[in-house]
Length: 226
Image (tube, rainbow, N blue to C red; front, top):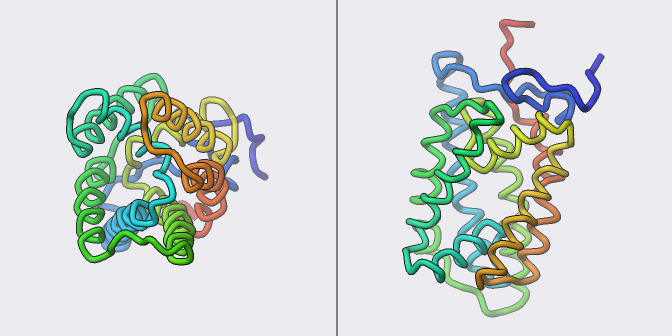
């Protein structure tokens, strides 16, 4: 029987909030081929999804609105601001007792490379039909990709670790926590002058429910425990 939604284990796992899916990081030596492949694929798809959304030109994702706003404020490059923001988010893991893993480090490198590569071959769209296709496809792919790489249980990225940690500590569902995080990032980025559009709103509202829906389908389970 599932535990009530408010329950969470000491490692910051919102188990009942994702249909009793255990998201605690597991050592890389356990089933390494499958899990490393899943991690790499998920991160690459995540980077591709970000590139699709930027080329749709209908509004950045909430975190990228924040990154752009901070770029305008500081004059630093977009990549530099993204890295600094990631470090800042990681500091928020401390009171949540979240544990980083190989996936946490791979998150930054693989996504950054994939975004640039996909943007090289995918031109910015100016026809509304293609813009909508890229936007919707990018958002859906982002939800799938997030669930895939988090589900490898090799350590979430900075922002996804914040999501799972807060879900565990508050007892709120992943979709509610993720939506609140995205809306907070959006508000801060908009106040700093980041680019805002219909795609931003759609992403902020849709990403949490999609991640919660996909996680049970792709999360790796330790069969040694039955």
